[in-house]
Image 1 (cartoon, one colour):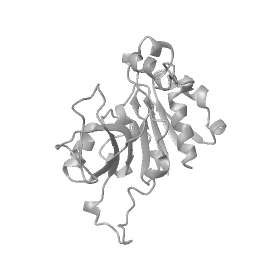
Image 2 (cartoon, one colour):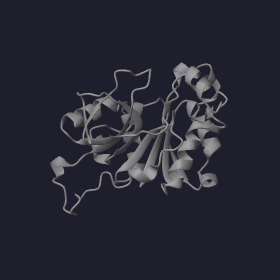
Image 3 (cartoon, helix red, strand yellow):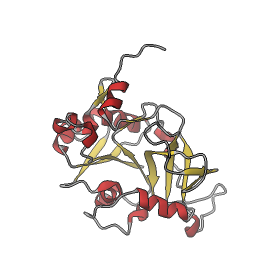
Length: 236
């Protein structure tokens, strides 16, 4: 299984920190955000990693290199201008192959996420080993979390293991998902495109599965949240 880490965002809400450092390289507890992900992926034996980048992307390449220092094989998808999440996937399709892949945002902190659990969530066969009818297969599997303070309305809801657009309780998309490459067939390489509308479209068709992730998770979207995460641990 291959992985893609989204690292092309400008990080406007992190300025001035991101004027001279790409957001994925900002450190949480002594380690760049993106390195937490690389190490956790490798721990689950997911070693082929694609990273897209735009703003100060050369610094990401200089820091991570080809991934050998982490036991990974890292390749890059450089974007002159950030193409948004779905657009970034479309541009990197030739690097991701034809099988379902895991994709995650570089600017989240979830140090204990076990990527072993993502393997097989989009298997083509049902529990009895029979092929699923093509029109009933999930095209994506999302990991949702309880709503943080900055997103009280949430993004989706769960009906058993189906992600639905309406319902209660509302939950927030963690930024971690597994996708079939065919989901992005309608997007041309180099075309900017957001992921959320695509997910909502497929969720309305009943083709998005998911589950609640209960472990440590933080969206490191602002300098204030970064400061909070790096505050000394008090043991309380």
